[in-house]
Length: 186
Image (tube, rainbow, N blue to C red; front, side):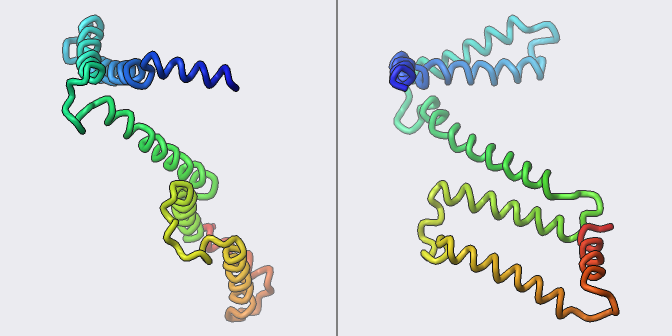
C-alpha cells in the first residue's frame, strides 16, 4: 500500500494531472475528431498528428507557466469537470443496466414503464445520497426502519387490492395470472 501511494505521489509531483493527462486527453480528442472529419484530406494522418500536438501544447504550456488568467485555466477546468462527468456517465450506465434487466420494450405493459421509472428514481436516490444531496431531508426518510415500513405497507396494499378487487368468478391464482398478463402485455 505504501509503495502504491508513494508511486502515485511521485507521478503527481512530476505533473501527471497538470501536464501529462490533460495533454494526452486533448491530443486524443482533437486527433480523433480530425481523423473522423478528414479536414486536411483523406490521407492526412501526419497533419492531424501535428495539429493535435500543437493544440495540446497550447493548452498545457500556459497552464504550467501560469499565463492563464484566474478562473480561465483550461487544465484546471478539465481537472475539475472530468470527475463530475465520470459520475454522470456511471449513473447513466447504472440506469441502463437496471432498465435492461427489468424493462421489456415490446409489449411490456404499464409494469415495465413503472419499473423503468422506479429505476430512474433508485439511481437518482443512490447517487444523490452518496453525493450528499439529501442531507436536508427529514431524518425519518433516511431511517432504514421507516423505509422498511413503507415497503411493508406497499406490499400489504397490493395484497389487499388483489383480495378486494371485483370478483369475476375467478380464483386468486387466475386474478394474479390475468394481472401479470395485462401488466406485461401478453
